[in-house]
Structure formats: structure tokens, C-alpha cells
Length: 184
Image (cartoon, rainbow, N blue to C red; front, side, top):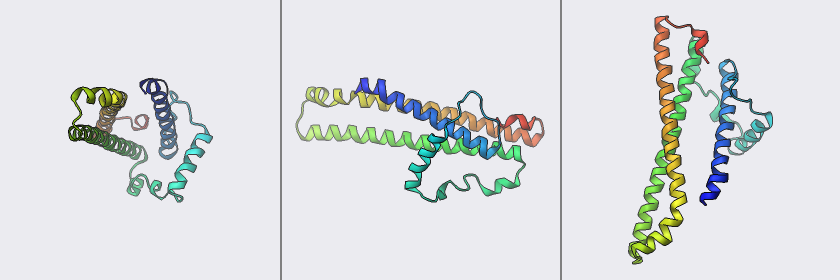
């Protein structure tokens, strides 16, 4: 399982993250009217179509994706609105990652308690618990710890971006910043 994780699962997850970042970048470019980040390759139309068709099975009208940003944002100057929208994206991403981290933690605690309780009920010795349960679970434990740490790092990065966006908005009210260059 560890070899499979190292050779396939980790690569699959990293590829999915890159693909999601490219699609999100395309969304931001189109919706916010900002320049494309040249460090990222554009996603191909087939990728977007495939994911769109998958999502359409869950929600045919795409209703939850409409008005992603507050409609009141239309009343704010364009460049400032772009920064506020990016701030909203950071908050959304941060909440998703915290939710995932909490569920991962809960799953780890429940799994551990279940193993301990079942072992105690069945009178299994600590040596048998280690050999027959913990060692086989070690790859899953390692995977969970890696994901937990990665999510913490992403949450910290998202939080920093959110703070930067907030400070930028504050600076905008003072008129001290060249607004068009800030959107990117």
C-alpha cells in the first residue's frame, strides 16, 4: 500500500491539484478579467467539458455555481471588486481545507478508538494488535498524516493570501496603491 501510495496515489493527487489550479485560474481570468498567469499552462477544453459533465449529473442546472460572488460586488469599482473576489476565494478555500482536516482528524480518532475497543473486547494482546492491526494500517496512518500536514500548509498559505488581500483593500481606501497592477 505504501508503494502504491508513493507511486500512484500521491502522483494522482498532485496531478488533480494542478488541474484544479489551472481550471480555477481560467475561472478567475474569465470572471475577474485579469491577465493569465503565464507560469500555469491553460487547461484544455476537454478537461473542463469532462468535469462539467460529471458535475451536471449531481446538479443539472449548475444553480449553486451561479452568483458565486455576492451580486452587490457589481456596485464596487472593478479593480477593487477583483481583490474582494479573490479574498472571497481565499476564505472559501480555507474553509474547505479546514473542513477536510477536521473530518480526517475525526476519522483517525474514531478508527483508533474502534481498534482499541475491539481489541479489548476480544482480548487481543498488545503484540497482536501491533502485528495484525497497526502495522497493516501504517500506510494509511502515514498517508493521513501527510494529508493533514499538507492541508495545514495550504491553510496557512490561504490565510496569508487572505491577510494580504485585506491589507490591500485597506490600502486602497488610502489611495496609496496602483490598483490595476494589484489584481494579479
